[in-house]
Image (tube, rainbow over all chains, first blue to last red; front, side):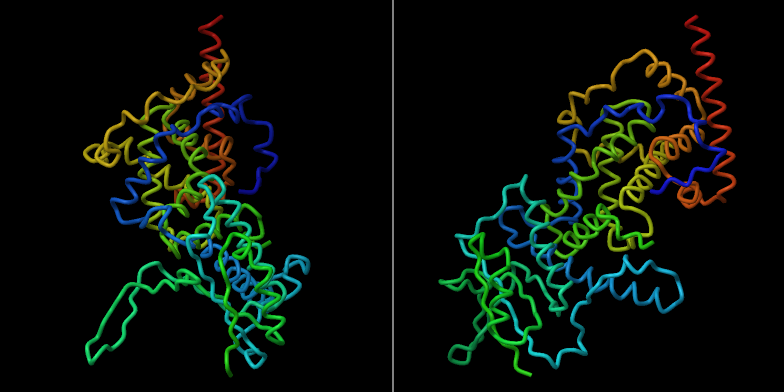
Length: 213
Length: 190
């Protein structure tokens, strides 16, 4: 909200109006009530502790939002709307057209060793993952990313019969929770990108695989 | 200027995308923790008091906001958008439209008590509160939106589906009415 008050508005409001009621805060119980209401209407799903990797969704969103922001900026710039140069990103994310350069998939896994954030530290974790993805996008190496849901099924034929099980948890790596696709000139560079992923310092693991073109 | 360049808007957009991607309660609670106090304060100011009524309004406003978040395009800040939903809900409650199901959602209001502490009970604040209570609801709404919540006339006009000039003249009349009400209160005390 920007202040567009003109001269006819300035200084006209009764004193103390802006401060009136500033001491009111939401009752502590409202948080749980609202969450329960959201659950009943199917607006939230899962419980905080068994819904792995949700903050990665924020990281992915940051990367996607960066790309989208570039797109919006480009459209506005080409449509003649004046945009200050310094509000546009200095670099841009990799585009599909640039897919001729080598691409690598970074698969993110979580097992029991992964240190999930405490409830009061989630915002910080979101910012950390989001910042990492945003930096990746700013350097032009972000191609795409997807968060995988916790549920799913693994199917195979055994003696002609289709067998299905829940999402496989690799004994060594845990559950696959999502992936990034990045542009890099070599496997070594892709590994360097993976090393900076916050996922590692919290006990997660990242598998780096070249995408064959 | 691109509206999403504001760091707060970027943080909101990131959390909205995280919520929409996962529908997880943790993502929702991050949004809730950022905006619930502001929504509650706005609802309490509309109602003229704290307690369970503004809490019910805010709870229902959140549920509607979650339903409509996929359509939120960032034309205004998330805070402005959420306060708009609070305002619509407040108007419904005031008209009595929602009387039948207001308390069903909340599942009982005991957990919402004790009511949050009242604003500092300075004498002038009480006079102001009583004066505001005497204003027609439309005057109180435009005063709160513009002078307290910081809405622009453009945003108020969009909210009420009126032209900006009407918002400005309404604000002018509301301020005059408040000054007169304050004067009457001060006169009573003298």
